[in-house]
Length: 520
Image (tube, rainbow, N blue to C red; front, top):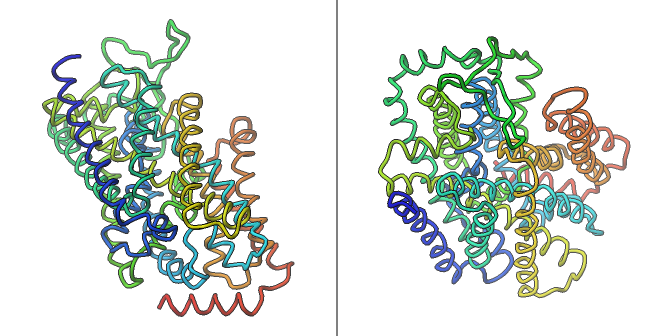
């Protein structure tokens, strides 16, 4: 291994060692009981709440997936995706955060999203618990798998290391501090990782901007690629078959080839892409941060921090992809590695390793949150809520840790056997969680008339529609992001079923009114 690679490994190794050390440090105060382990006893301040929410939300997709889309297809899809996510972040913090914080505590101190659903509707048979936890297990396995894929691609691209080995190593590192430290350790590491992510993005953006010749130089170069600067369309890369049976972009004279005209898309396509923002209403790893904030009055400050971070990070990520295409006119195999390539080009090896650790920060900050969410759903909601209601706190935490191990194994399988595009794997998991939980979160918080049968029907219909649309409709009939039709269907089902079923009890309505008053 070259001296440069050794220096980069040192930079990455320092980062990973720091994250594990934080988990060990906070294990002394963050895992005494399930509420502490899963929700840190609701003691997150505004900075910890906002930054951990954004770090767990954006994941390695932000540094590899989003720049990769911009580098490969131009500004169109990347811009509208980022805009949809930005609007979704802003609305979610403004609309959902306060009400969920107050309602989750009033609903007999619910500490997970499935438990909130169950207690909100006085679900004594724990039906909602079982359904929500099962959905979480399915889609979060894909989510964790996408983040392990990020790390595998990172080390394979940098050092040529075996992807299987690096996927397993990354899973072990994340498991180590999540198993030990719980939600508090996850929150603290996410705060640090959010800062690393945005610093890395800004550094690469600034250096790339001036290296490419500023706005005039970037624009001049990108105009040579048809459709690349079209906000209402995407470029069409010309693909050719490889000797190994795969596909790569055609390169002539060192320049990647695109069709003479891009593909335009209209209003429906734009709405489909921006539908990413709807997913926020159903993301357990984001919503649990709202539940963990120490005071409702701190949510406004948290919102300002979160939205600012989101804008800076996504703006830089999209620009990095465009700047990368202006600089690297050829094809180097994997468009999602553009952040890595630019880091190696602009900085000395040791510093490049520290910058690239932003990718590790992004993937690890998401993976730990996903693992904690799934384990809390299974241990607290299914095991204690259904299987053994008198389970001790020690047993619940043991089951949670075993669940983390199982999900990690499933995620490794997903990372190595499903789509190799980080962007597409994340899109599928995002749609599944967003359509299953998002409509129910909104109706639960803001419509008193929502009934238990409607909650069950809405959750199931949203999740099933995502699978049906992704596997049947989208490949054959209509290329529309599955989150949008599934979200709309779930909303309609919840509304209609609520109207034709018995209204909620007076006790449920009283809790709703109390939560509404507590928000003010």
